[in-house]
Amino acid sequence: MLNIPTDTPSYVPATAWMRHGPFAMWLVRAMQPRRIVELGTHHGYSYFCFCQAVEADNLAADCFAVDTWAGDEHAGYYDDSVYTAVRAENEKYSRFSTLLKKTFAEALEDIPDASVDLLHVDGRHFYNDVREDFESWIPKLSNRAIVLFHDTEVRERDFGVWRYWSELAPKHPSLNFTYQHGLGVLFWGEQIADGLKSFAALIGDEDSRTLIADYFEAQGEAFVQRRGHERLSQELTASADRLRSELKATQQNLTELTSALTSAQEELAGARSELAQARRYPLRQLKAKMEFKVLRLFAKAERFISVASAERFRRSAMKRDPDRSGH
Image (cartoon, rainbow, N blue to C red; front, side, top):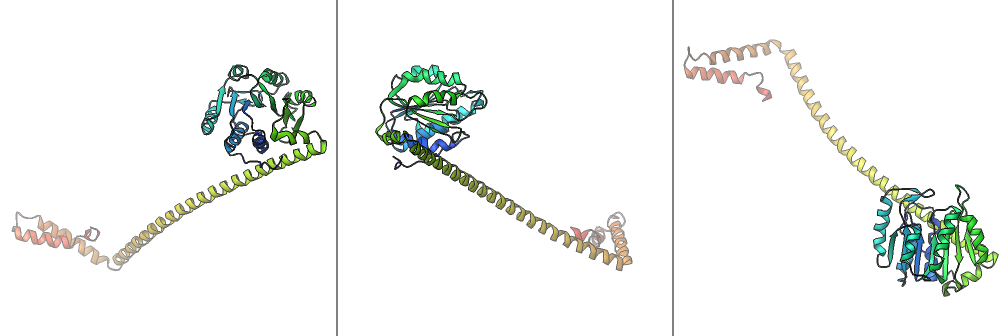
């Protein structure tokens, strides 16, 4: 029975179903259902676990996800972004997967009677709601159907799945996984798929039932731990990349600052040299300025001297221009 390996779900959005993913994929591979229907899909984790298993084993199955994608009192209310994400993921499985954006009652007309081998009930969780959801779909179940009920262990916020499960479970072969809010596995049909006969036999014994529950809980916990390690590794890699980028930018800034500081130091050294020169030879500086002004004045006196003389005075003035060194 357990020689069929559990798988690692590839699509992991926000979910309260995570630890049940490996079991869900094992169940599909062992049972090989011809039709799967999920009532209440939300972000799609459980549904795409089913689809991934169908795809992996190339099973001749079709899958239907039924939801209004508007939310309820227990799941919370949300906008169209959730449905948009689910629809995008469903593209991978469009060959056999259909999203029915309807109420559970409206979707009944889309599914033939006695055709559903695997039904997952995960809608609104009040007692009357879960009872109505399941019982309205009983005509759609095949003679080898298995039904999954999520949140069989939640007793807060008026959840009533646990109460309805306690009424159903004693009447049929069943197993309740108590971890991750609880998942009830109910053998509804009179026939049992060949791949599940040993499983069904074992859950009739208390010790074996406990062993199976422990096994799949360990598989679910191992998946969660691997997922956590992967996310941590991704976060550390992203942090390292960000730090390398910041270090590179800091090094570039440091290079630019060093260059600017060098230029400033050179300018300061030049200014200090000029200041020292001016302090050492103050009269020489004054004499140079006076000569420049006199020569410039003579160069402009063309009315009184020849053009050639004026040109000589202009050139001499240019040589003594105090601002010439800065041009």
